[in-house]
Length: 371
Image (tube, rainbow, N blue to C red):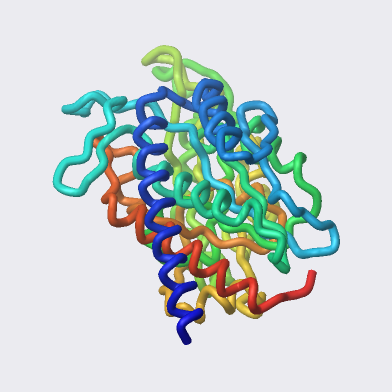
């Protein structure tokens, strides 16, 4: 009993130290501009921070990748991945976006909430377990670049550094609720073709009217199947352009469709249906950002749900789309504050995230699971 109390006291002290360390790290990261594709400085800072604590890491582009010291190919691997890039600061900021300030328990600064709190929570957790030789699993870490633009030199590139990954926790602000599925994204450039002619003489075949027919179909089409956690596929026309002069019937009308796919209909499935019913030429910009859903039966999913965490399906995309293994999206911070002016995260939220992760993995080491 005395030993149990002593071990518990040590754990509390260790967590408190990691919380203070993580807060100091995040304040430094906020003050380093790291807009997508320009994250070299923040990547170097994170790598140096790890090095000073005896942690070996590798730069893969602007992604910082690491494996626990006693990595073993025969053990299952859990990846902690969050991103260190940010969107550009909006013009609505009333304070310096690169000045880290704590006011009334709130840490202000660009990237503090999305996804700084998640990132430093995962760094603190990874550094806590890095030198542990008694883990029945491997713990992997990635501070990813280009998440905000879904860039090919972000998580997609970083994941080539790792071998098989059995489970991933993606660090995004979810208010410590568990996103067990996530919608995919497909952006389609569409062109309705007509025939040019003079508007006054009722000539030609108006491409705008052809586009309207397809847009009406997009607005009214009902997919047969519905995802249990993500609901229906959502298609939205978000841009349109046609015509060169007021008196010329346009021969082309360009429009853009934003598609949010689900585990019921992936990107390829939706594209096939669109081409079946639409007359317009359809060109997807990418099929990479796929929907995801992790089986409830997965042992790590069970372990997380056993903590009494609320679960949901996420309508927003993240690096979860790039991870080809069972995964969840879960971390401190509030998604509603992402990309907002005067962005902030509560210090207590970061502390809560670190305490949860360290406690969770401490408990998980006593419940070994197979690859």
